[in-house]
Figure: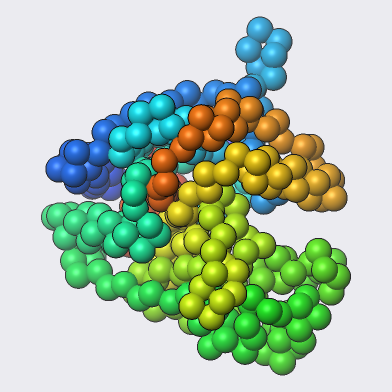
Length: 336
């Protein structure tokens, strides 16, 4: 922790840019009659995602958790209301601390009943374009990007082009061989067993795929392997292979947003939660507390919908061309 550091590391110009960004986001959704909502930051449930960890707190001796995202609570509202909704809130993750990570961050999340994945990707691109074009400041003397460009590539196309394998058919052994062929470092502890495939896909994505994305533009990566479905529906693609209807938006190599054509089956969702907890145990982590209220909402009936979450701090880094998340926060973890 910095000693006697009361000042913000963000410039006045960036703080104003953040305020303008939030104002323009609300205007964008207001124009589309998408309702702003609020949900609790504290919950009795925690994430089961093996790649995320919830921050823990206590209330009257009971353990509770700060949300890693408002997703479950927002879907409960959606199940009872059925209207398109959005939220700007703080989220918390017990994650690494670095240039792109702060344990407390600002998240924009919204859900569109009746939208498929492609329609939501198009709306996200519209929002990004509006935010870029409506920004009227030059931070640090650098002109802000006014004409954003978007590339669209499926997970299969990306891996066939940059790795040389079909990710929907490859084995962990084939991923290992692809790493050797492409002179990629072999991570310590990553083997070639059946349970290692997702780890290999994540590694090859960061080492071979993301570095090939356009450095000064946005890229949508979509139709992830079924094994990485998270909370997304699984369907057949045009090649009759099972894929997760999931997408991510990147600027260069940096992930900004993660979206799904949402799973609505409560039994399948519970099965996935249990599988994730099994994976957490194998990784030596505590099991997550499954959100039974969310499952009850799915039992009641979640409308067919798509949803997306975007990290606003990271997006503001793109907008202002800054290289460290501390530069866009009023106070980062080290100064909080």
